[in-house]
Length: 54
Image 1 (cartoon, one colour):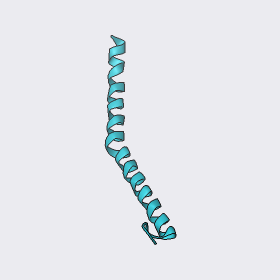
Image 2: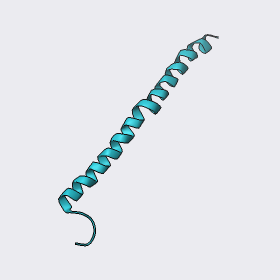
Image 3: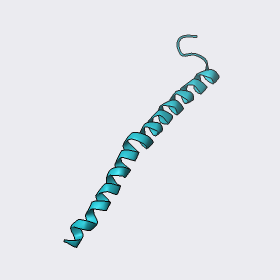
């Protein structure tokens, strides 16, 4: 009986951690990754010139 009572707060903490990661942290990381990827391509084309025949 004591184990069931102790498991409820841990389950609540786990759910809060999942929601924080799924809806707050990972979307910002995804946007930052895509932005960095685009910035890398933009920087490369600024140095190397536009793609295509020259």
